[in-house]
Image 1 (cartoon, helix red, strand yellow):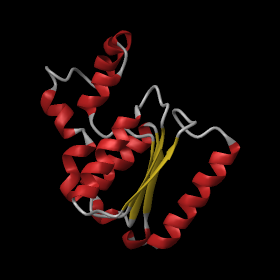
Image 2 (cartoon, helix red, strand yellow):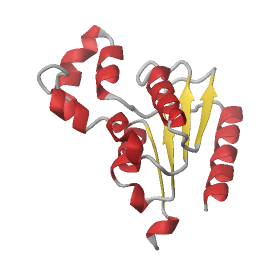
Image 3 (cartoon, helix red, strand yellow):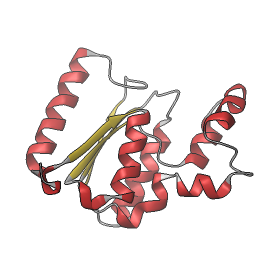
Amino acid sequence: SSREKLFVMGGSYGGYMTLLLAGRNPEYFRAAIDIVGVSNLFTFYNSVPEHWKPMMELWIGNPETDRERFIKDSPITYLDDMVNPMLIIQGANDPRVVKEESDQIVEALRAKGRDIEYLVFDDEGHGITKKANEKIAYRRMAEFLERCK
């Protein structure tokens, strides 16, 4: 398969990796679909409950002592290189990856004039669980991929 025809898509950690790949390696992908992905490790770390922070520090580090790593590994660092169309899907009630994670990258990319579609489900959390919403999401993904091919 040629690079011009590849799409990247993922949810949760896969959504984070989708955003990171879309920014670090845009030449590999025609478009991207992020579902509830972290966009900024600094704001992600600050959004979690205090009792999660020791585990977060084991997984991703500490924003003060690992500042350079947080910058390097935050998708939002690579906004200038996120040039391909993107569909971002988010649950408004997500307790793990809060909606502000998606809001901030959508806002920043739109400010740069990028082709961004943003689908928020007001009655979902970390992922899409309701059948009616699944149908909407899958239809929207199919339409997005068709438009971008």
